[in-house]
Length: 124
Image (cartoon, rainbow, N blue to C red; front, side):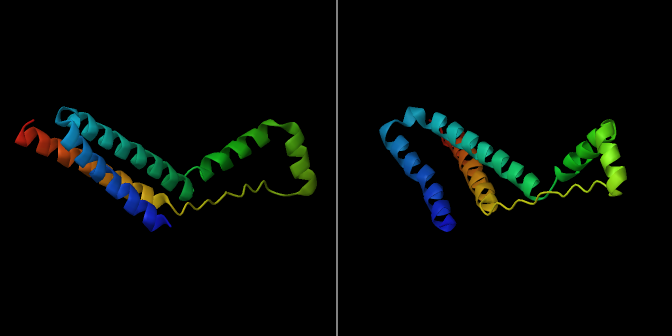
């Protein structure tokens, strides 16, 4: 399923490129800029998913719970009664589409950059 999505999203810019090139060559730079921006958006989303999947924010959540539990007298009494340390279990998330989103972002950015270089080199 995800390989099919990668294939579809990889060929969509090429199809749109041909249509724009044939129908309205003056709008080509707008298409290339849009492709680059979409690639950047995919890269940002993929990077955020990678950070979440890697557990980067678990330390922040654990330290926040510890900090707020020391501020609350009620929480301190409960911990003393039960003689337990506050154990903040980190959540683990797995996003199977992360690498595909990053791949698509790279492809879109490369299409945008290569197209812009070719467009400016070969002229309008």
